[in-house]
Picture 1 (cartoon, rainbow, N blue to C red):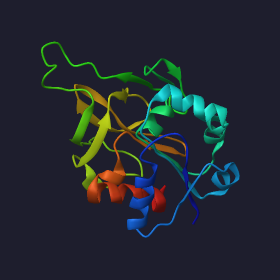
Picture 2: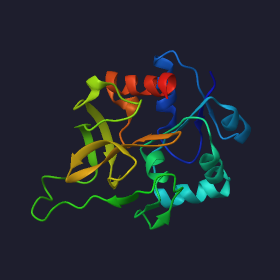
Picture 3: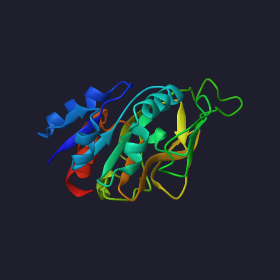
Picture 4: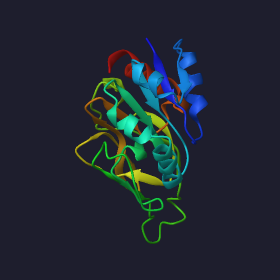
Length: 200
């Protein structure tokens, strides 16, 4: 099986590759469009800023490529946010694979010292749906680092509460995505990556 990890101007890409290696799965980190198109599975990870990253994707025609993919695709963190319709982070239109918008966390009045932004650390996922998850993953803890979140909507397949409920994972057709980092989420995250490779 050929696994492609999309290489672009975002951080944290290699940690996904290392996580797959720990599972005995070999992937190729690449920006080559033919290699991405011919892969059996594609992973679109990343940590960074939405508007500069979207500009990079458009400059290198990766935006249209990602939207055209027919094989299973997994977006992670920034990858998931860029798969949404629009991001408040410097007011940028994104790929539009998911209809939901990405907005900034705003602590409730008087709770600024309790609920800090970014949302960083371990939190529960619940209301799980789709092949990414096993039944035993309900209310398990996974690792988040983000200041912006995708709103709840028709494509939400996992929810997490921080200030308010938000989309922890999304799914539409062949596109899957997680706001949390499965590559940093211990055995649960490893199982989610394995489910994507083997079941989706």
